[in-house]
Length: 418
Image (cartoon, rainbow, N blue to C red; front, side, top):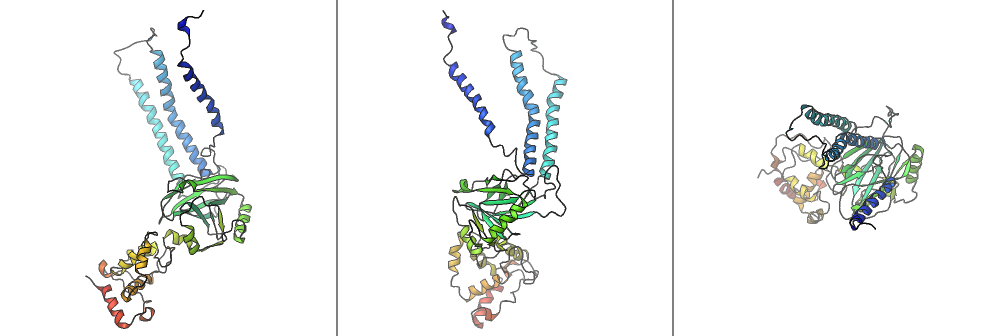
């Protein structure tokens, strides 16, 4: 008969069961999608290699420490009477050298690896190779793609092909890719794990990403990696990598108006598209206004709105003084708060018309550049007088609906120093 004390502890069974269950689940890890470590793009592959090499270097310290912890606990256990016990021991020069030299060497290696990788994988840096065996040809022309993060969808503009897509990214394999990235409202993050690392998208700013896809396939996924509101979870888009010939065929098909054709993408269509919407299906535009991306970047898609680049050019010349106060109010960059100020200027008087026309004549809503022949360098830096900026020659009495008496009355506040 078994002694009562030899019966199994009822607490051991649940613990053992949990351990066995956890070990059995490790087999399921083989089905995990390790796209970050096995991507389709060379830039992402180099980033994955950097992660692996950094992990291995750190494990050179972590594994021995964990092993020695178990070894010392076992060797100096209370039941081991043969262990060498030295209660007065407190120092070993050799041991100190090993303890400090090993981590120092690893940190030096990690620093060198990170320094080189950070510069070589700079997203603003053009890629120098297609893969480990193929260098980029000196005459290779990257495919330029303009990316706009909307609420809550992605807009891709292909300026060379003159087309655009929503929530669908198609790129040719083996060709350098040059992404220009911005956003329409809140900050976002553009991320295709199989291609390269994530890059932030911010309104009024442009970030860049240079990458390449080495494998063809239609099962790649891109998404937003930065929370941006209620529809954030639906900001996912299908990414396809095809051959150069198939890409040309696809672009020609979009231009011809095939499946999911949404027509032409101009400023009016874009203003409707940028309105918040969730779980938007893929759409294709057969044509795109050439200056649309520039206006999106400079936050001046809406008619009559001064481009940010033009306002900065005017500010660089000294500003507009009092003449610009009403313009700043009416052309505010808050796209959802501008309606009130626009309504206030819906029926302007003569003085208001003069001020608005004076300012708008300095710009042509041309994103990226302000015409140099419109204004001269400031004569002084007194902002209240407009820093010496004279009224544009295009403003003539006949171009504004008021008589001469109104013109002088309206113009006098513009040169006031009060």
